[in-house]
Length: 333
Image (cartoon, rainbow, N blue to C red; front, side, top):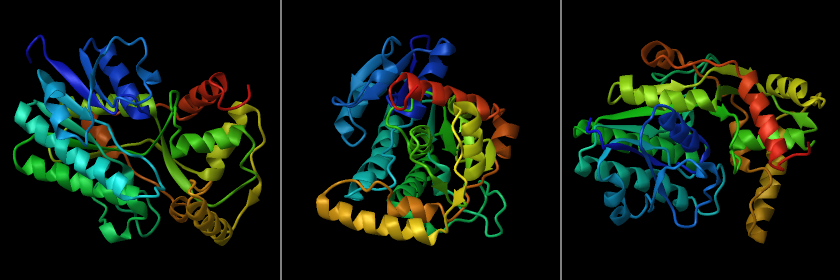
């Protein structure tokens, strides 16, 4: 690798991308970030990274960002479980991936790590944790976000077939500090801290430390096989187990009332209908409730074996998340 080569991170202002930037800097790498002109840049303040203004949906802005780049970490995505116009997700998640990979191929980069999601993978019919080989049908995926991440993977695979060395990583539900939006998982923590979760439903997630997810990106660039997918996850937990762990960390009681799925489904349907009429985002989207009917359990064994993915106990990033949300005004101290 040329001594003056650098690594490009798209989506570096976001949750995962900001931690990928920090992991690269910790290894002494020179980092460049593609940032939109209006994007919030709190996560990059004081890091000394090179910022290039551009947008993954605008191909003409990508060539300057890729000049002299060795590795691309394509973390940029529109991560929303509800959107008034689903075409916005299509334009960023699918069209943006096509633009970035085409520009990377022209620039002759050494490696691309494409950040996908476990949402683009299949689920097990018997409730056991799914892995990278679990069959998936696009039409069975719930919501525009999952479908666009699935389509973006197909774009990445097509470029691998053309000779561009693309490795796909599929983070599960990362937790930790600097989730400024926050993500749906982060919003769950914030709602709990603010006493807005009086009840729960029978669902589950695979939690993983966002630091481990960032490290998994770097390991994928170093050891991952082009054309392969790697689940970046750790511990499968029911929602009640997550809330009980948060209760122990935050000193708040965990909810004890379990709701049947039909009740939040009905409330979300009504709220989504009203939100469309009023032009606002629903407090609880219909897609998120439909997703909660299935436990999102996954097996990260392949990434652990082939990449050496760390498996930090999830209580540690939950503690950091609680402290960060409280320190930054998302929840009372």
